[in-house]
Image (cartoon, rainbow, N blue to C red; front, top):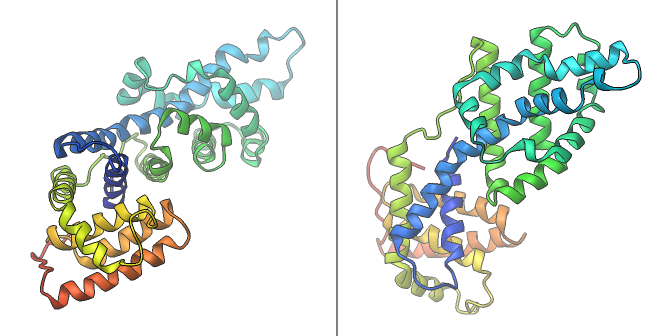
Length: 312
């Protein structure tokens, strides 16, 4: 679930937060970034718990047999689509998810208005009409559950707003979480097992990158700032956005002080992060500035990369 771009983004956010503040120790920032990374596992469980909690909400608050008027067969079938959904039941029984539901980070049961709005939205979809016309077999429940989670991440405004309110990193995490959900559904479709993706591909290397990037950045910040100033003489710090400035300092840190990361990878990654977080012209400005610095640093033999196993 964690990739190198996300590590850079989370490190950038912590370093950017310290931009105008008092000097903070590398250890403090490293702990903050690592906590944000580890919290992603809980954030995935928050999203996964939505389906079982939606089913429980409908069971307890919207049972058609509780209505005074006579219920139709369509009302009963609609009720069963959610409350007898075999895939959502299997999700709820998964050990990690059930443990999370006992002490949730975000309790969906406290968000009934949001649940109801999303429930009504889902019932307007073509996917809902398709399952309503089906025999409600396991494969129908599986396909419909898959749709629910994709709808949450990609289309539900209410879900988006709530997640942004509860998780300040939601903008960065939602696509990695969506990819993790796709892996869960793919695994279940093939092997009929719920298997949650591992948070790290290589925990030791990923966390070492956090430590190295932050410590190298802080230890060499003054020197890197002086280097950057030489190549931006017409741009005082107030004219370069704080986002662009921080990203360029991070990129230069990787060029000079992180020998196992290829220059091209660092350059491309920070240009992409600039496209996500800064102004439309920022990526071109960053690219042009870093290109000039790289050209001169290479001529001065200041960049030394090593090792077969260069990582991104």
